[in-house]
Length: 110
Image (cartoon, rainbow, N blue to C red):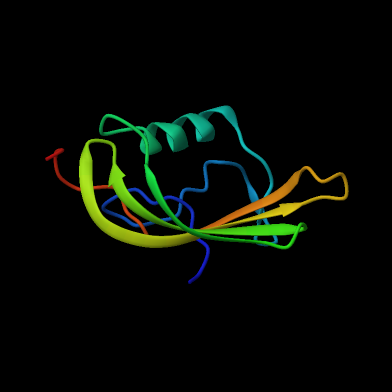
């Protein structure tokens, strides 16, 4: 799987409003970009519940395998994904990567 940012139908273009991209890396969020990102996530009456499947943790990084089962009010067939969290020298979260290919529902909630 390749890393993806949330996409908005129908164009399927990556959301780059979270901040400027330089050398393939997101530089940082801006207020309008974060607002539209979270409006997309919490549209359709709610968030994105996950069904947790497996966790692998080596004390430096942790990978969580999951299924997306609903977007807001719309039930979905399970769609697989994985989130990888890397701890920094302090033990605190340094990097988070999410790999999936889920799309928001295109129709009204069921």
